[in-house]
Image (cartoon, rainbow, N blue to C red; front, side):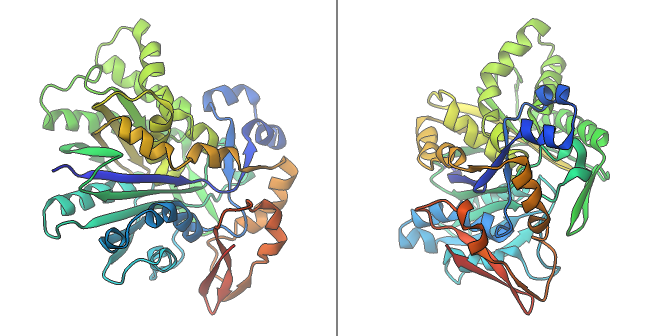
Length: 406
């Protein structure tokens, strides 16, 4: 019996801004736009937060399940850098608005952009143990962006939204290669979120840590799996994608370490990696959902043969990393395409730079504690898509967050 991802969906908000417009508005060097390799960036609106992102990503998955399978979700975890409280988890709100059963383990986990993968592996091990036959786990990587002009070139690259991953013993989307993984991590301050209002980043330290952890986590993977050749073991690759230029550098690094001739590297990148970058180029860095956004992009874009193996790389600042793998097929592609992620990305409202700059101060309050707050959702009604029920954040009452379906 195999274990892995039964369903995968991504919610990336209802608004976007062309990255070129953001560069122009901020007066950034447009010569650097090509390395970023992004077309659009998802933008969080004042009525969106980690709870709404998580619920809006997971609801299509949960609604598609028969009642007995919905009740089989006994592990619910939110992976987030965007916590709302030092005690109460984001998960408790998510559990309520997804209408899940009361017999459920609920946790919130944090390790920058790696946490969803660590949780996925631990949950898969629990399911495979047979301790609770037929159980499922729902992992939701959910974050909001806290970037403005202070972030420099990180502002155009930082995304918004959530990736929802349902795990079980019918891995329609990706069957994990259980036991095939490589780990690497150490303490470093390459990025952090010291307050609910802004992020800090040491860009150079972060890039070097990402590449260093890739080399060492893949070496650990090779030590656990006999006969692995990076060139031939994986039909496709999906990596944590802060921006596409870094993924290209990561691929080139492993290819050179595998002694692949330079003339072959670019063609290999286009064949094995490029399909995973289409959604990230439309969304930006989705934090711990990033590698699963890349996987969704791969399955929605590439021609997937039966039994194709995917190598996945997850990295989180601070830092922790894992290289792992799994098998996909035509059914995997069909299952992800049925979620219409591509269509929902296309339907996002395009913002001008002036609209973006006007909305940003209110959007940046998403994580700030407030005893009482009212968000006038009707003020932003023009940004909500017609004919699609979404959960929106309406404010707080005695520090308790309030939400409505809109």
